[in-house]
Image (cartoon, rainbow, N blue to C red; front, side, top):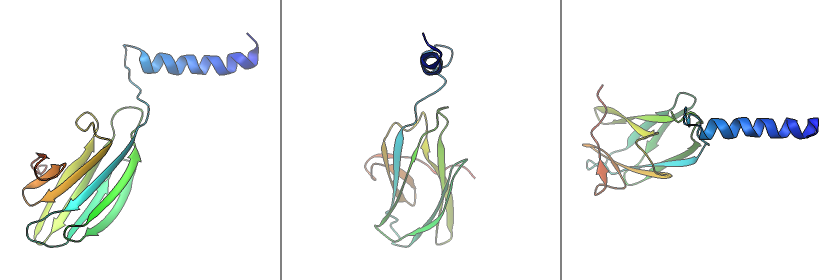
Length: 133
C-alpha cells in the first residue's frame, strides 16, 4: 500500500472501529432533526419561547395563537444532543426539553403547547408535564 493510500485508509478504519465497537458505539453519525412548536394555548394569547442547547441560543420568538415556530439542527456525534425551551404567557413561565437524544426518536418533532404541558404530535399525542423549576 502506498503512503497516500495509507493516509486515506487508516483514518477510515479508525472511524469505522469507533462507530461500530462494542466499547461504545460511543460515536453516532449526526442526524438532521426539526422541532416545530405550535401555540395551542386555550387562553388564546401569545406564547413567547426561548430555545437553547449547549452550543446554540436561538433567541426569543413570539408565537401567536394557532401559529408555529420551527428550527432545525444536526445531532452531535456523542449522542447527547439536548434542546430546551422556556415558555412564557400571561403570568406563567415553564420550561421543557423539546429534543433529548434517547427520548426523542423523531426526525420531525411537532410539539403543541397547551397550559397543562407540551404534547408531541398534537393534543391527542403524547403529552408531558412541564419540567420542574
